Amino acid sequence: MESEKTIAESTKGVSAEEDSAAAAAAETVTAEGGAPAEAVAEGVQTEAAPAEAVAESVQAEAAAESAQTEAAPAKAVAESARTEAAVESAPAEAAAADAPAEESQEAPTPTESMADYEAEIEASFKRVREGDILTGTVIGVDEEKVTLDLKYYAEGIIKKEDLSNDPDFQLKEEVQIGDEVTATVVKTDDGEGNILLSRKEANDLLAWDKLKKMLEERTIVKVKIAEIVKSGAVAYLEGIRGFIPASKLAAGYVEDLSEWDGKTLEVTVITADEENKRLVLSGREVAREKLADEKRKKVAKCQVGAVVEGTVETLKDYGAFVVLENGLTGLLHISQISTQRIKHPGVVLKEGQTVKVKILSTDNGKISLSMRALEGADAPAEEVFDYKESGAATTGLGALLKGIKLN
Image 1: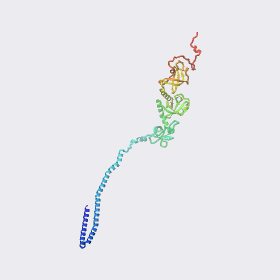
Image 2: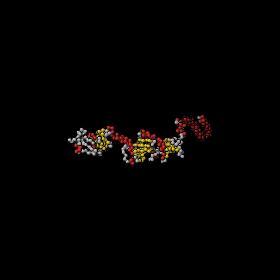
Image 3: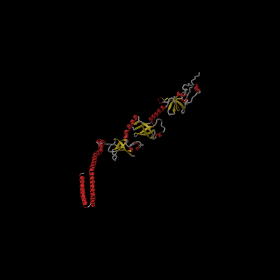
Image 4: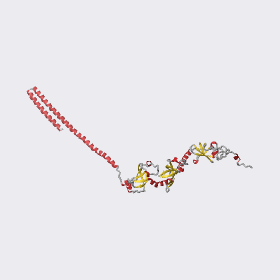
């Protein structure tokens, strides 16, 4: 501002001097002659005009410089504000950058200790000898062998022929990765750094204990018939060859043994003689129990008082056995065959005959039938028929005269 004052005062001084000069010139000219004096005065004013323009230009420049000077503090203030904002944001960014580090510190990396390698350390000190029985986890299966993880520095190998005595044994079907297998050490080194094992030998030692337990507990197991022999069938259980007599294959009599070849059936152990290597199996008890269970279910569905049809299966002195529509067999007692008194069911019935009967009772799983109930229980008893084993009734002369005494 002081520079502007100085410039203005300087300008005013110049203007005053020029005005004084112009006035003096005008007076001189006026003294010499009027018209020319006026002209000279106008020339002096014309020369004064550029000086005024210069003064105005100087004032404009001074004003611009003043505006720039006034704007400078505002710009400095803005830059200062930006600097402060940057300074304030720096800790936040640093905190954000440090956050993952803090989070990672909250979940420390687990450290390993000797306890983590305890099993491996113990395995390294374990000594394996021929004849030892080891249990391992299957880690590999191919057409010729099974590879086991024994938790030992060496892996175990079981060749196909050392897995089972069963001639129908299918390696890939019956052994899966992850299975546990118990086997006997045959060699501690097979020449390739592996332990050679045999499950067959281990089975021979352990299987009989399992079989004896099955015998005691009457365990039901499934076996497949491997072959048919003269008086029965052969099946393998726990790798041991077992014999099933023909009379023990099914619930009833088996006429054609060849029909059972290759079949799978449920059996129980009835003999487990380790000393004589004798294993005997039976499917009869299981089959009969199944039939009995099915019969109980069917009997439970029979309604007392229902009238059904059936076929006479067999005739006995005390009545007839009738096979009903549902496959069950009921007893038609001789007293329930007819309202008339008969000495044998053959007087009225014959095997294969279809009859209509009424269910009287299903107590204790036994079905009692009646034909008499359909005729009328109150009908009077009439003629008594005689009966012979031939199944024919007779009224011959000898029968009429029997018991008569002649004098």
